[in-house]
Amino acid sequence: MKKKTLFLSALACVLALVLVACGGSSSGDAPAAGGDGTDAKGEGVMTYAEYAAAAVDDPVVVECFVQGKQSWWDDKATIYAADADGGYFIYNAACSEEDYAKLTDGAKIKVTGYKGEWSGEVEVVEGTIEFEEGSYIASAVDVTDKLGTDELINFQNQKVAFTGLTVESSTDPDGKEVAYLYNWDGSGTQGDDLYFNVSDGKATYSFTVESYLCDKDSDVYKAVEGLNVGDTVDLEGFLYWYEGANPHITSVTVK
Image (cartoon, rainbow, N blue to C red; front, side, top):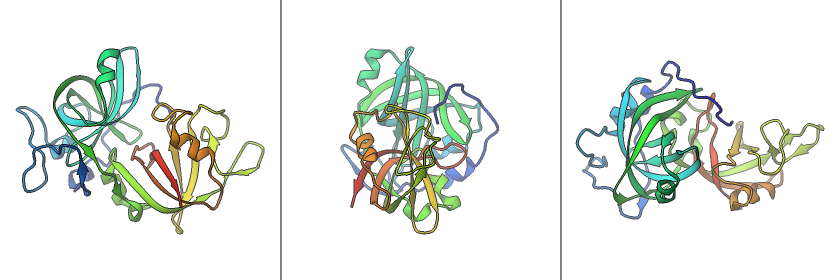
């Protein structure tokens, strides 16, 4: 679901994030870490637990590593980032086009801004970005068994994986059963967000390929366009939240 206007509202379900224990290994040069897996932070920088416990509208300062770039326009960047303990959605941070090009996967940044929330999605807003030394790529955490549970929100904005799901049908505006839709209601055309349904055998869930994050020429966009109802798939992406879980898928493997 595209965001047109930022709304800040009361904190919802955020304290649950404090309990996150980010599983999985990492590739690249991992951040300096203590025995409990918490990466060392610079002076005045919050740990992930401190960030998660902060109230909406509170000022925040976080150090994190770029995991994916979603968009840039009007000198503002929107990216997914992570540290060893959790994920961050950096929304519309001040960023020149030249600096946006430097926001490669794994790049370490310090972001100073405010904690925001929009329809359940927790984010850093009104931020500024500083580049720092270091590199870290988080591995996707398999959360298949968390689908349909209250625990899933604990992984919000992290890189996650879903395995062994079955593609279920969606209904297009003409009443035809199809494997995917352009836009959530089928009103779009190629280049818009893709929506598709998957099942874990217990319930059916709607997943998205966000076209700003992965456009129509990306491998994942083309892979979803090639899906058939009944396919078994493994998926990876970022656990975005919009009135509930709305994973932004970045990889599809048909088994």
